[in-house]
Image (tube, rainbow, N blue to C red; front, side):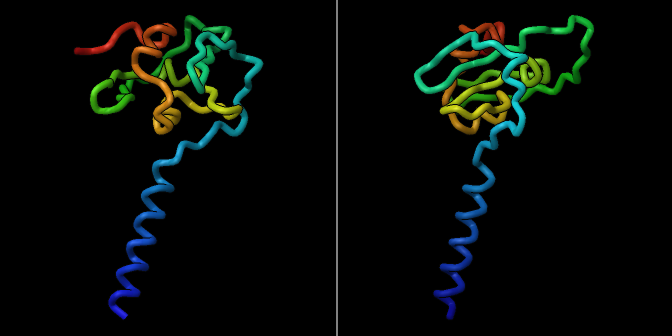
Length: 117
């Protein structure tokens, strides 16, 4: 009985951990408001065509990347950019879970100005 309980707990834990780390695509990405500005091996970065210069954003910073390659993005990047990966469109922060882009990709595309050393 203890072995069955242990296996059941292990299965539930693994299921919850994998479900929490999955990237959720945008439900209605409004692709017609964006244009593709960068193409990687298996992803593209799309930028909003019109950027309202008077738009205000909260300024929390979100770290993206992995252990050796991290940079930060904010609310403007989340609003103005999205990632296309195999026909699905993702919020730029949500796409970080897919690990398809690097900070160098974001810098080359002009999404971020530079990275912190």
